[in-house]
Length: 189
Image (cartoon, rainbow, N blue to C red; front, side):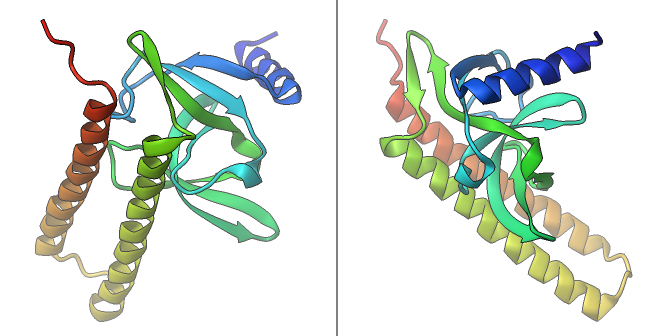
């Protein structure tokens, strides 16, 4: 049995049991919330349980991915999600049948973060709506630009976009890092 089929079978069994699993993150796209190799506590959920701000776990191009949800919409009777990595600006779209579960906790040092309670539930919801708002605003501005300038390239617009998107990513990172430092104060030597 090829590796992809084995992974799909394991995921299907896990979905049926509804159990919580620990998955190790791979990559740096969710910094500063978690980094490469961070153990993630993941619970299988139904797609309609995924809310804006949640870190959804889903299949994408034969990989398992954990990204933040910044939007939900229905099209042709199917539920879709706008997802994005915390280290970037542009979101992607995933269909409901790609959803495996959601990250409910992150193991850090000798303890773990519970993303479904308290400050982390609020933080993730705020970050999700922050990105939802700015992505919607970006789409409106892009539509206005297209109506005014058609497909004409405007070099200054690209530079402004780069500066603003970098600022927005850094502001979100600062906020998450601040909450992270409050959750895990540095140990005194």
